[in-house]
Image (cartoon, rainbow, N blue to C red; front, side, top):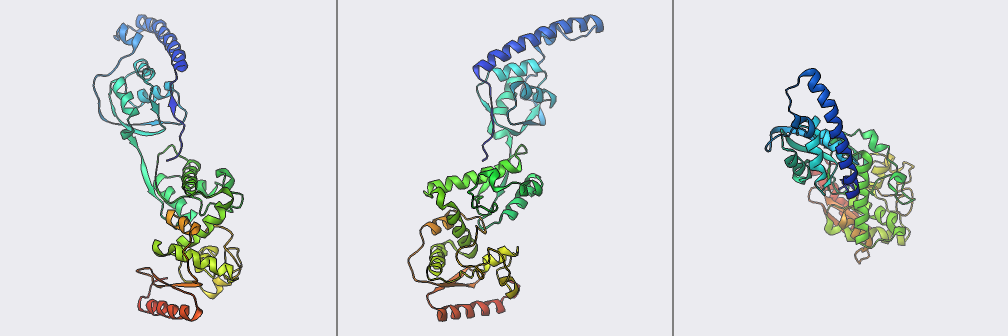
Length: 355
């Protein structure tokens, strides 16, 4: 979850706020007396000097939003304005009496709540309204942006405007692809495109730290891991796939990954055309040797592990012969690979519609 600025009422703040509250109540006395005399108000002296308060836990529903860095005064005002509590003074006192943290977000409370009960409810994380977003392994940044935009209503343009430098990515990063960790996230209406993406990059950094990936190797590791994630159909094949790519680089062979070709021309198909494979872009591993210039997808833990610890073997080729089951064959010779390709082509003919 994103790191959020929380509101904590420190002891010095409480002293200051109590003084402010005393001045506030004194002002109420002066203004209130004049109002009573002038308007013959039926409100009691007690209500003017201390503020009315509801009794009980309330009923119905009211949504209260706590913004990052809000003061106790602002939170109290929000509770009153939303109809949760009756007046400012008792609400403010209830806030001053707690040492809890108020996290930004939307909270589902009730109308007509006693001030103390309302503050306790605001501190209860169970009342916080959050929507979850599942970011799948292998997603491109564009898919991540759309998923988050659809769920949280933040314009896609806001996500697209976030740059690698905004997140503090390695200098080699050309975009955000591969640097946002795939997982389930919970965000609220107070989160921005930047705060969401920061949370995802922070989660990736946590994963890389746990796997002891040095800073100098992050870009290379995520590039290989993103390739393995996108090409692999089963995590059980990831380590063999990683070794196959490294073996090809070692002997001077182009990787010839259709996944990189598809990425480079902004396509989403498994198969590629001759024209796409001839396209001149730095991700095209038919045209350029070595790894692509950056990750092509968001790798999960298993793909990152495979990039760090490839299996032992002399494979130079692999081919997924059944796109439905993900069955993949690995070969050390071109003849063996051609036999696997023939199986894949036969499967494709028997299963039209797969791309």
